[in-house]
Image (cartoon, rainbow, N blue to C red; front, side, top):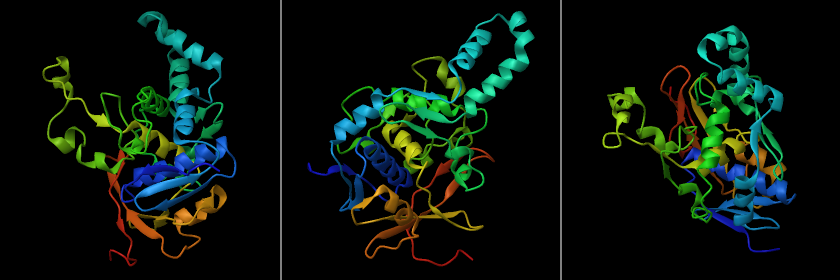
Length: 286
């Protein structure tokens, strides 16, 4: 087997942790039986390929959602109509628009995965949906993927790769917590967007955001009920993906592994961000 894949990781950034889980998900789909673990400020993967191959596969695969090609074409057709004509198809446009915003995202060959965790209210996945109802999960994931077309980021520091003006991120990156929106900053960005001189362009880490979005399909933190506290474990032994699931949430304790807790920042009832994590020492806030 070749040398393990290695990426630098800050385990106190929940977005980076779940991005590593997403990276393992991709590696296992490309080379079944891949093993991952955290060690010395890095996430490592034993598999049959290289980091570049994993990331190249992510960038090159087709990203869409579970809508049919006919539904996509019909939505585009209605959207291109002039106002008076389009109004006759308003209900159909709203129905297709809702489906386009909310339908599960699909990454096609060679990855072949459907991402629908944000619709899972039964098992709690939907609590980590950080975007509002009128934001499109397809548009966000597409923007993050489009920002990765350059090859300069495909190295051990891929989770720190930052891009300006790449669109709205998912806000899984806890470093974004301080950037905030209009309420957090104290003024609206919109009036400043009229000219390049005054425009404020936010930055995002697209690889982190997209990989964390993938990672949350299989990996979830443990919730401390009624306290807005979530726990995850950076396991320290090479494990196949089936065993890393219980290891990550703490259901399978591994001696010497570091455990962390983080909270969700509620900007509004629907808009959320991941906050930085701290080492978990047990106990309650009360």
